[in-house]
Image (cartoon, rainbow, N blue to C red; front, side, top):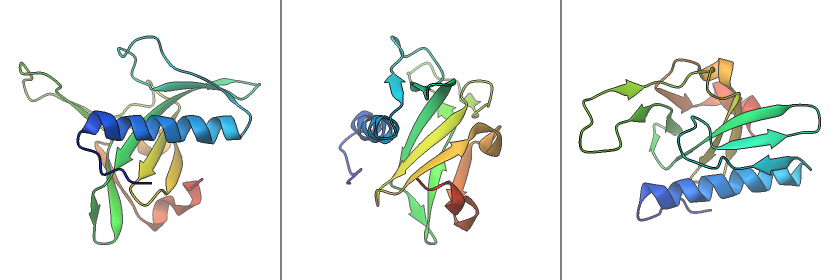
Length: 128
């Protein structure tokens, strides 16, 4: 896969598509929220429970490991410098797609309150 898109919206579309393919490949039902005001990107039904999934993508690699921005920063010209860190209250899992096509499914407790993470060996067990 190539996340090298001209804009971050297109890069995000690639990530959402990969997440949908992953979960439907497992036989799960996937729903997309009707609006963009939710703090998650997908709802996954595995037949026993519903899970809220936040999807993140990254191309940024430093010292051999990909770095993933988990926080939300602004989005319009009136932005006043507020950064919202990821919260487990808003999603149950974070599905991450990196530029080399590696994918991770991280439990929200693992990344709660963090603005970013470095996908080194600590997260290898969460590769899917």
